[in-house]
Length: 334
Image (tube, rainbow, N blue to C red; front, top):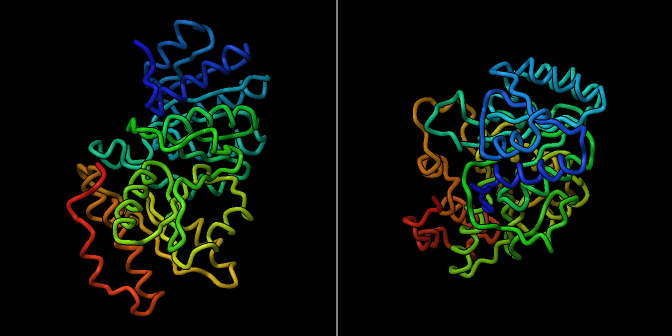
């Protein structure tokens, strides 16, 4: 079997393979979680892949110790397990020394929605953003996932790469995406700006297409690195249109919404802003991505409606509220 060119997880392991080939002191630690990419690395580098077992706190401390001995260490596991369970180890063992420990974490957002709140990756961004020196990558496709892993390795400090389980068509053309900027404009627009991250980028692009059919020009910006951010660049993006809508598959507090609100609050003439996100609570039971998009308005149609509502306020009646009904509510990106 070969790695899927569209799967962000396989793309991440492709990048790790590139690092392993160039750096004999690179290692991978896993918390008893397998993957095709892990199997391929084991076959080629059996002495550089270690299964630390279901003991995430210990795994991170071991990774820090290896990094102190001159190793670059990749860790692999489910996002909610590799962050919440070992936050203290990330803070004290890794970040205090700015060590090259790079977490490759599957399960961003509701990737594992049916597995319940133990597997939901929807409460990690706030705590991770508070860690000094921690880079946070949230790619929406395989191209950015691969580039993010290589950039995290090159930068040489602590990093988390949040990966989705979906394998969508690429949203980025790397010939025009500058990975070091941390964001990219995927669609031009002058009426509104939709800022999205991770899987929500694809919903934002569909929303922009829906809006275009109604004569609304919406720009779509993918913020694929949530820390560190280029504050000047991001602030400039947020000031370019009278309306900004953010969308993310994460709890409202601490994630993209909070990050953008911090920047918008500093603008002399802030745009109208609305944040679309999950609720600040645990989503108990079986939660599918499609159900969450409907319940919290983070699907394509919900995004389009939010843009129309804000434009109604900005234009003071120039765009009638009833016009939002023209958006086809049956259309939603799965």
